[in-house]
Length: 168
Image (cartoon, rainbow, N blue to C red; front, side):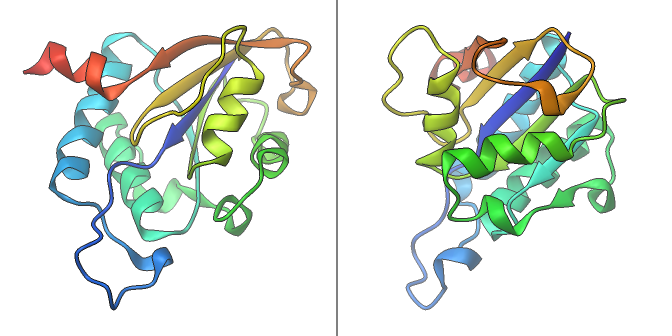
């Protein structure tokens, strides 16, 4: 069984109006939440071995924090320009680029595409995945390119407010 984790970047800092949207960093809450969410994935044994990220500062910074928790080098994070200001189809399409030897992979991106992608695999209505929220999509198969809404489903929705209560 393969698992793809759709991760919305952690909370970003809006205090410096001179920065472009692309360059916005994480704020204090984002820097706090990201490692705790990554540790939770380790606790539930859902550790990606392949990480794909939007190159935008807040998404890539989130991916680097997760990678560090998993023992993955920053240089191993694959950057995909199409994940910034992406549409749901681009996010789901990026899955086909994941090498098949990986059983668990993660994509770090932005809303509204992250929420929309997760919602496509859910049987329940999902209106918004908050910052640092994670949707785990699972499917039986050997090839990432074979993932469709017909053969995969949302198996976990990890929301920071619920997960982080365990660490307070």
